[in-house]
Image (cartoon, rainbow, N blue to C red; front, side, top):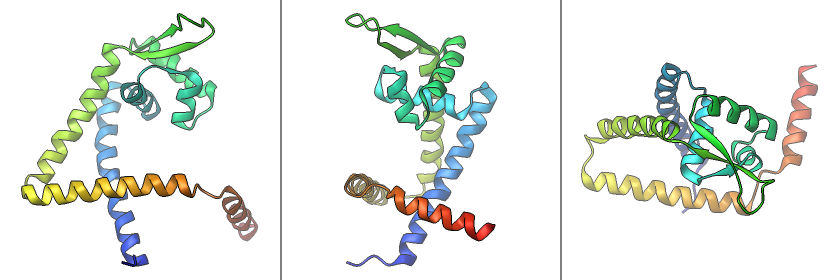
Length: 168
């Protein structure tokens, strides 16, 4: 079955719009707690992946090691994470999530669950399952396609140069 461009645009917009609503709700919670989005993403990475070095965290956050270190400093000061040296190689330091940081992540995630539960209560069980199956298949295919065909940075650079030249 051939996918048409209009359907792809509609799907991309639907995903983006739903993510925007959920993100905005999360931002309100985080602002109330005095936590920035990069700080939350750091906590979430540790929650999902376990202890990470600054380099690993930086890669996950698409940030420089120095940025990851700054985030770690602030979160450590708030008692949400701690740095622990590796027992086998003292040069390696990993950031670990503390109970306070875990509670922040769980509060935000639980709010998302509650919100989605409210939104989805009008759907039937069959509709829930169809939606979940479709989203899981989409995720699998998106991840597979991303690995098979990463972003062509040369094309991006050319587009960027054309944009800069057309603005001048």
